[in-house]
Length: 208
Image 1 (tube, rainbow, N blue to C red):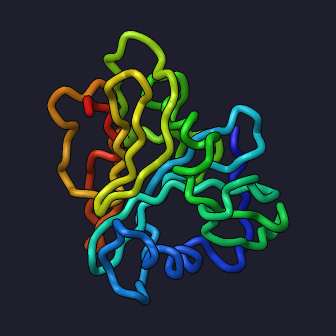
Image 2: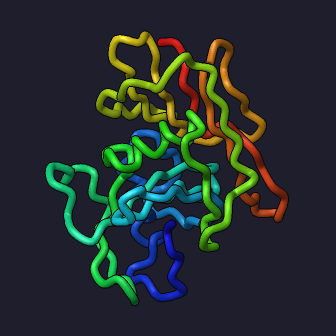
């Protein structure tokens, strides 16, 4: 169970993302975005070592899904996926990574799709997030994922020898639903600037 600490972060997650997002091919906003943390959810690391968060941020260009992991030491071989470092008021130095390149997050995402774990509220300890909806119609566990590849709308992982791709939506479209033929999916919600709730497809496991 991830324990949510009420403390300070320097810099904040949003400040880190404001510098990092403009370097991503799927981000369509300005070079100096004014981001708002609008929603998301967490997953528990079975080992209790890595923080896992699927954050939704918004700006004038739209809504973006940013999976992040937080670690107490650098992740070997993942220098290219480092979003930045922060000082946590309780835990000390934290390394924040693009979670698509962190095996703890990708394993957690598959576990969520398959129903082996449950999405947790973003800011409340030990509380399921009931706005996150998942389904899986496959015949067995997904055997694994290939390396992530960014496009101008998503990050995609092939499933070796299965004829499938896991597509994680980076650019969120309110009201979107799983494509025809999808065998697994995760959908979630976030808050629009006017205070209303938007719902969309976050990830889909589908034929290539």
